[in-house]
Image 1 (cartoon, rainbow, N blue to C red):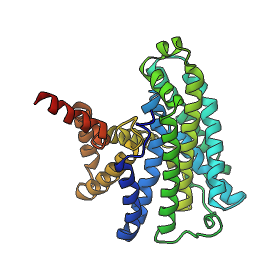
Image 2: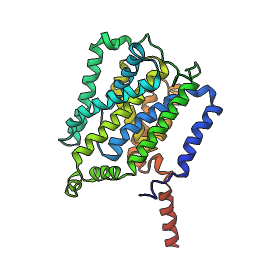
Image 3: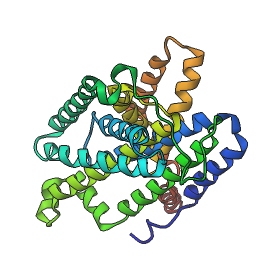
Image 4: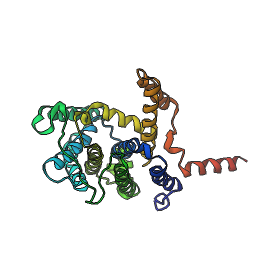
Length: 322
């Protein structure tokens, strides 16, 4: 466990590239911010999907709750972003805790439909509560204050990018600590065989509730970042396509590898932008084709390319063969 938890070279390269992007790509700050937010959203889903094996089609519910919480905080209370971020995390985590008990029974299909149903109910509730959320017009009339009272958001998105990357980095470090802890190993045991995990005294029910609550809180932080960096939120943050997109991001990047969500967010955003320019009417077709190819043939996924243990095993195998 100690060896696997060491910081790897590719991890340093990822964050170094994020820093260099600030200086080398000043005109792409808004796109890079979107990638960071999507990567954090995917990271939150990876906690329950990649480590606990729970598939969710309603993860956008927590993303949207966080987005609206941050907007309402800025509109009615304080405009300081970090406080809004903490409030979004708490409210989304509470929603995740309450809905987690619906996942404790039933098969994967039951959980899939349960999460979808929860997401649809929250989206419809937000639509009906127009007095609070703004309904179809969205939540407007608020502005986000400077981060920690020092760093104001600018039109070019530089502050928003740095803010989002710092939050993403902290979230990944938290997830990294979880993944390489006994708690993370117990989640993998539950994913592999929950009955056998129970036989060795792993409390599957409690673990699922905890990890689902943590994942909901992280998703809420991602939604709050989107609201704070754009000074706007609408029912789109609760839409089903949000949940579908983040699942696609993890299919592209891989699950259970911490950085799969980041790699997938980069690939998905670049593909979507380039394909929507090249073929505006049919770009979803090419995304769907890529999904089919990855499911059928792309077993290694993008993240496994950077696994040092994978290449070490291959080299050892070649040496033994020689």
